Image (tube, rainbow, N blue to C red; front, top):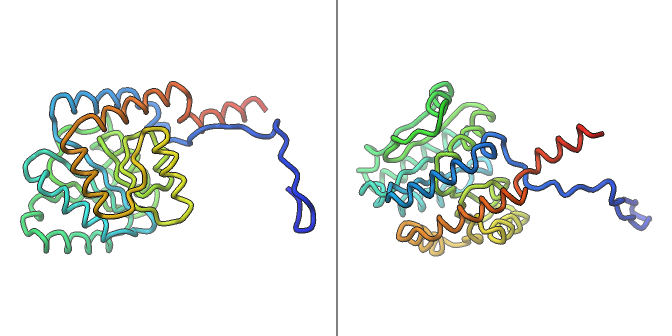
Length: 250
C-alpha cells in the first residue's frame, strides 16, 4: 500500500473479492422462513415484535428508556411485545428498570428477566417462541451469550431497534437509531439503500414518529421484508459463505 514517502499503489484486482454482508449462519439459514412468518403475523394482526439491542458497552440507555416508554402503551394493550437484550451490562439494566418503573409503576408487572444461558437456549432450541407477552429482558454473564442472544432474538422479532453498527448489515427489518461512532453513519445509509432498514433516526422526535408509523400500518414491514428476500436472492447477505468458498479453492 506504500509508505509515508511512497505513493500508494492499488491492490491488484485478483486480490479483491466483493463478498457481501457477514451474517450469522443461524439467521441466514432461516431467513426466508422468518420473513414469511413476519408477513403472516402482520396479516393476522398479531402483536408487533420489537427487539431492542444495546451495543456500545451498554451505551444509549437514556434513549432505550425513551423507546420503551413510547412502546409501553402498545404493550399494555397487547399490540406489541418487546425483547430487550442488555448483554452483559447488568448495571445498565438496573438503571433502565428504575427509570422505566418510576415513569410508570405498572410496567414492573410486564417485565420478565432472563439471566440463565441454558434457559435462553431451551427457549429457542426448536424455533423462536410464539407465546411471549409484555417485556422480556436478557442479561447474561459473558460476551458470547450476550452477543448470541441477539442472533436468537433476530429470528423472533419483526423489527430490530439498534444503533447502525454491525447489526445494520443483518437481514432483519431495522429501525436505525442514532449512531455512536461517526463511521456508523454509512451503515445506516447502506441499510436504507437496500430497503431493509430506516435511515438513521438522529432525534427522539424522529424515533417517536417512526414507532407510531410501524405500529399504525403494515406497509413498512412488508416493504422491508420484501427487500430482504430480494437481497438474499441476489447474494448480498452471503459474505461469510463466499469467503469460505474462496478459501476452500485456494
